[in-house]
Length: 233
Picture 1: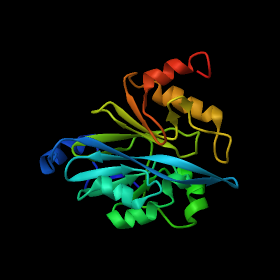
Picture 2: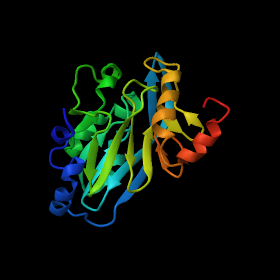
Picture 3: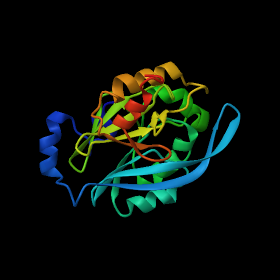
Picture 4: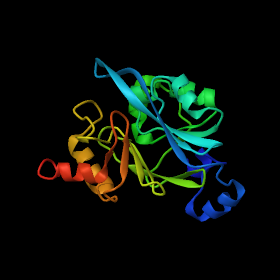
């Protein structure tokens, strides 16, 4: 499924961006809203308490949400009266997607996921489908602002980061944290693959790029790149 099919009224290729800007000018200042939600993460017979970040990007009228962690009402509170035009899933671990169908129904917004995470999604939702596939290089648009999908497998096969060049911001899901790569050692993960993803796809970004993570504090590409020198880089 193409990006035009997944978010047909609110996504655009680069060739369409200027036309869309004229049709739907930004309503107010572009902003990122942040919250947290607490719940559990379960995989391989283990369950752990976790706190997830909630990230919402948009203007005063429209927005997108990154992931659907734990608490539908907490996400809705950050969105307010705005129209959510898409839920962009960074990966399919249950702490990021357990409430995704409920959130999608509440917001009337499509769920978008990299199909390489289908087996991970199935652990939580069985054969319940998501709404559209995210592919490497897809560009989504909200409030005249491009969001670029970057495939970063390793934490899970379909892990995806989302770059917002206008803001110099990366939403990294569980691929990159303050302190290094996301966890591996569980089913569907691979340490060498996540290191390659970060090295080839993320550490090539400007060092000043701010990284908004799936859990814990922000970091920057530069901070993590320098910290990795002599360790795993």
